[in-house]
Image (tube, rainbow, N blue to C red; front, side, top):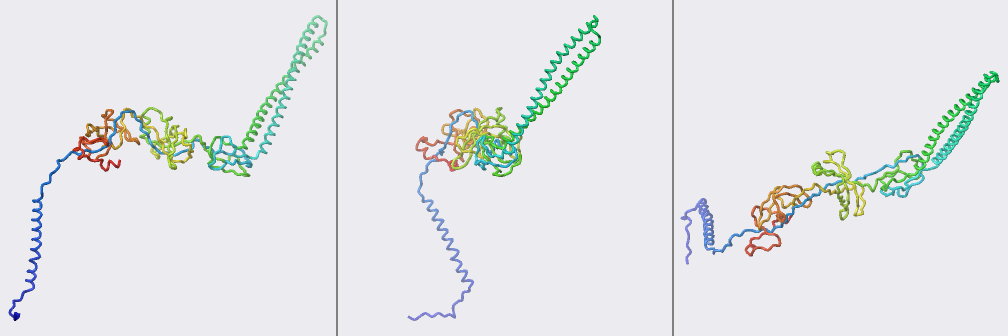
Length: 457
């Protein structure tokens, strides 16, 4: 077969612009065709879909928790924090100067000492000598007083005899005067008897003066004797002060003595605090303090519980409010209150500075209802469950407690209040308590469990 020959000289040339237009036609038309076919196919599928039977809508039932209403007198507990302080502490000072010759083995920081225990002793030599000298001076003064009292007794005896002699002289003079009148005695004899009477009177006056002087001297001696007795007592007390003893059962917080150290009078030797007088200081806000005062009962004497969180478990102590601070402390947010520890059931000894929690009974709210905090919505209403549906009840929140909230409202004993938080909560919502059987199989299909926020409560 003879091949066909093309005469290239007679072919019509195609421009580049025409070729590009011809190539654009399939690129535009083909996507439009595909989209049209897909739309037609989707419409056909929807139209040919078989009818599926639909279940009629059912009311949802929420499974919830509820609490019964019980009116009673409730006293919420006030929880505050404070610190342990020593109710009584003392700095024991050396009352006399001298060299320390004895120190107790228990005299160490943190050690416990018993009441009356000897903590340290100072050299007694000089103080024993002072006692001996004071005793000797007192004995000498007592002997001098006894001597003066003996002289007074002698002078008083002389005065008594002188009074007798004076009376005899008066009688003798009277008889002489009678004899002169009768002429049996000369006037000179009368003058002699008058002189004797004057001498007796003079002797009595001198005796009385000596008695007065001796009594005054004896009184001076008695005053000196009292002074010497006081000096003896002072010397004995200084001697006893050479031994420093613990005034109460306590714990040593500081000590500054060693054997051989020279202590001066008034030097601080030991610091103690009383283990039987431990207190807890805490602050009550103005609001809480005012609530407690509104009751009319005194805060002093109210029992409290002190909780010390240390180790694996909290330690609890019994306490009684002992006193209230003298002034309100703005920087502490209220007023300071001091509670004295009265019992220690855990047998663990508290030390000053421990950070503790104080649980104190608060104000009494009579005829109130205790509910969980999850029961209250908007701080002014709750939902009661009546015949399986929620019913809104207005309440007034009285106080909060660690166990929940105290409210007052239109309740009756035995009413049940919703305790589960539901986001879609509202009047008439159908609910069922956990453990209760549904009314029927149809109702079971519409039940819902507690929402995620309820599970978190």
